[in-house]
Image 1: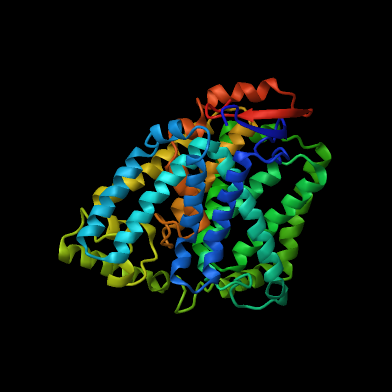
Image 2: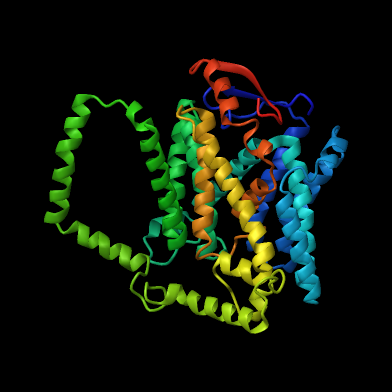
Length: 449
């Protein structure tokens, strides 16, 4: 590991390229991390209480592997070299959980502390790019399995919400696919091999279709907003100016757009499409409509605020996982974070998330549209989806889904782990390599070179 991880990759797509075929310690660790992401979603297929800790057990095994590795002394010495604010918030939350005398809350906090140490060890050993690669592999496998297990429901044209043939709630499935879609689309964008690129493009479209069919409006809106933000940044940076269109293409587009609009109006297709969206997304129903208070969520939020005010626990909260037993399911990550961790620990946790967000924002700022920039831009979009989706979901600070687990890895990383020595130091490396000729090997180490 002192020499890094050897990857065989084209110059412009080394993040997404398959790794070297030889099996080594880093390969084994990356496979275990990928399995932890898969187990984080597969746990919902088992009705066993301990199943929710299976991802943590797998990551504990990953941490044990690192402690058995050749550089265990250095990893332990720098265990708090990143995510220090996050670790302080976790410990503070565990103290609050201990005072609540809730055994489940205490165990949950202990699991969080162990998860942090394991995440730090893994990030130090293989780096964030390898973790994201493992996450993308889990995304590809999950999307393929959902297409296979839910193919009958998908093509049957039923009005019920899509679950992919799993026992997971459609909103949970939508949350998971919202986190998987950016990395699958990124893999499709970076892949240069002809048939593999086509496969990834089809899979990315299918992943968005699965997301839409779940009927999870929060996840769908978050992905669309992140896509809009990505396009806005691309326009502002002038990336779209490099897209060359022939005069014939421009003429065809100018002619076809008004013709298509006239056709849709003439055959009343726009109104039918609007009715379909209204029915499928339940925009006007009493249970899930726009006037239902976000499916009754707002009433739970008000109750949570009332309980916090009645017990004067705004600063400290009530401890991990106490919201479900005290007020019910709080389908808002920010309200749940406030209820369980309070303003002190919750503010530190949210500050750790903002640190990752703005670090990725700066890293994706260079004007050159390189593979590094697109990689950081993908992670930045991933954080946007996470922030927005948690307005109507409760996975903000947990390890209950692969998406939350991936963000936890990012939060446990230092600035050096996230972006190496900075985007300006990384970009020149991309420029000196041939844009089309394959490179025999590429070595990634902790410094980002």
